[in-house]
Amino acid sequence: AWKIPDRFVDQRYTSVMHGVGMHGETPFIAHAMDYETYGRDGFVVPGMVVSVESYIGEKGGREGVKLEDEILVTETGTELV
Image (cartoon, rainbow, N blue to C red; front, side, top):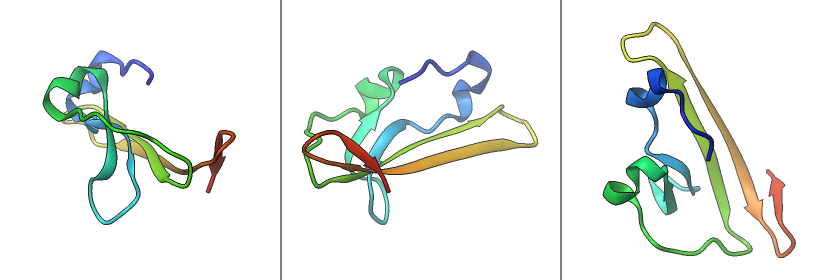
């Protein structure tokens, strides 16, 4: 994952990617800085749909942006859903 600029670190999502479901679905791929606390071993396999997302906003700031894409993992790569 890309390195989050320091001024946005406090407001980050702890995951870079997670499974699609109601809440915190597996797999849960944590940022490197959060792996010790939230990281889990696991597999990403064909047929899974995962959400790649981020939130960027400064702590105490008035605005921020949340971006999220759902990706289907296929035998040959990925497809944007």
